[in-house]
Image 1 (cartoon, rainbow, N blue to C red):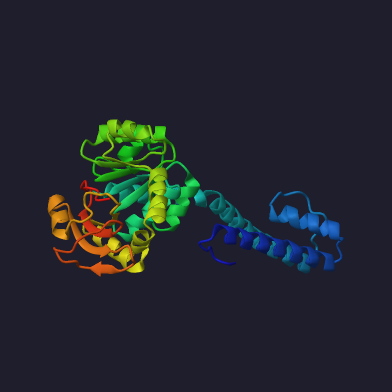
Image 2: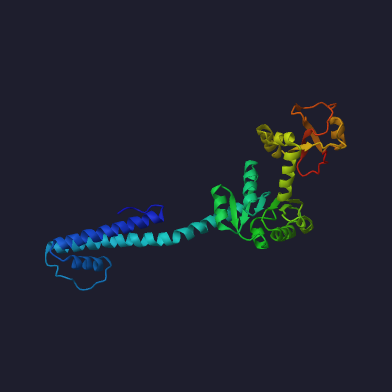
Length: 339
């Protein structure tokens, strides 16, 4: 008899196949001994299932008794295996889920200074990828089991539950977390999550997603440190591509993207700030711009409107209208706009 494997479905198939083979072989053996097919099949079934009815025909010959003994031994063995496989098939998923939940909760209980991502939709998916690439410790909180399964397949730590529930936030370690991102595609839910998280942890950094223009002030009053408006950001990006195409292309270059990723791990950000016609910064030198920003930015390159790029410009380099100024800023600092 085949031993148990780790696959419940495979064990169940093995058990059914073995029992089918026992019934088929025993039926053919009794038929060869002179019984009808119906009598042989009926007798094999009541023998295998140990029902205990009277014999269909007297077992008077040694051959019939040998066939019956073999049917009993192989049939009982097969039934034991099949019963075990069936129980394993029914309970395996539940056991795995319980063990998985326990392992997950153990991991979460050991996390500190982590990031909680509430919502694994389109933005949550991209955010998790960026956090993972940046080496940040984080977990994903969502009510949708299918989304959490997808996140788990990507190696992310997940926690099922409603982020508006303070008990769930407690399980996510909100008191030990350093940041929480509310990226659920529902402004009202994000406001409620922000309120709950701020109530549990006064020091946590909360970044919330807002769709409607009126939501930003509500999220800030609820306790969010910053509000991200995807629609507004998308509109700004499109406008930048239209008004300052050369500057926009600069940030999309492979080297700049790689540099930006590296800087983020150091708590810095790389930005390209277009200098609009009529800007007070048009005609100023690099030194004047850096001095006016009071140390909040450092100019690393200037992209001229004619397409030329000047790397590491000197302090006396003059910035002109419609140039793109590439600057490094510290993450979370308010940076003066030079556009």
